Amino acid sequence: MTLIVLAALAMSGALPQDAPVQTAPPADAPARLGGLAPASPWPNGPPAPGQQVVFVPNPRTPSEAFPPPPPRENVPFCKRGQFDGCKQRGG
Image (tube, rainbow, N blue to C red; front, side, top):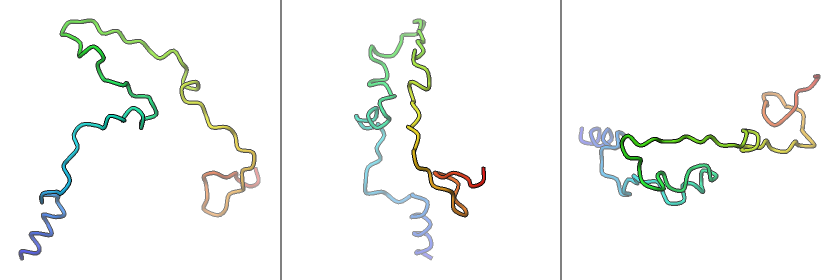
């Protein structure tokens, strides 16, 4: 009976863990996201109540911000059950 209770607690995560839970993202989070995240969420601190917040959209188009990969010269034909990274026969 004790083993069943301990197994249930282990499966539910109720037992104490060895590693501490990390609450804040690491300092290199913008680098891991490809540089899309701001360096700091509020450079001048959070806006004061009643202060006007101005939204400035990105001037680059989506195709400029996220360019497509270059075309591949040699694409093999698809095998049975394969759908990605190949071209269909007979078309």
